[in-house]
Length: 269
Image (tube, rainbow, N blue to C red; front, side):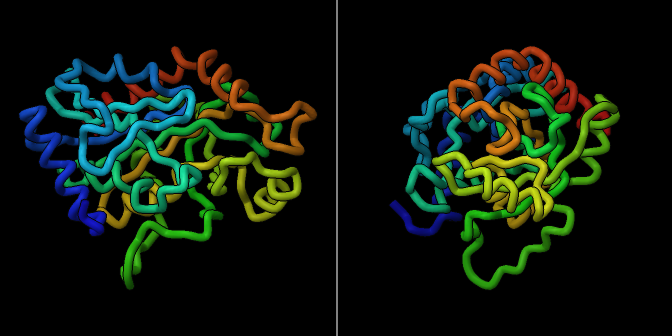
């Protein structure tokens, strides 16, 4: 296997092209906890591939995360790649596998990446089930997916244009700053307070590294978080992954419609 992550992404893209007979995709989506029910509303599946059949991908062992890559034809004829095989930094495989899906999407010609996640909230009004647009992030992992002296501008890491589009569909969507911790343990109350002092409204274990890789590749990024719990120190209840999955299940129908409406709105914008 090649050690060059960009070459590996090219091999993955070529494999997907051969299997789907689709030369170019228009957008890619990573569906995190609570968001997977949106997939069926996005269009007809052309081909669904198991992750471990595509170069550089592997099946996630985390409950609530899928292990497939699906190309779907949207109602307007565009094609979307659903990255249901997200790799997290805490899986211990390094930062390149975390960015691999994003880079593969870019090699397939995508211009837009939609990233979703389930996260904790430091804003007491944002209760479980609240969808929040990400307007900026704090990368607290101490790593970057970028190799070498490639100085990528992250001023507008999360596209103002796409955020405005999302708010035109749901004017009540709040915006917040997302902090990515390395995981897999949940943050301590002191760590959450630190993140809050630094400006974080949301805390989780994904998204920021993917966004950095996407901006390096020239993709426009829309990030949406589902609040699944109040972060440590903001709730008296202990944190659990079961709680995360349940919050996602409870909000899934609403989230699915929101996401499909946003995707459909992109063509019109």
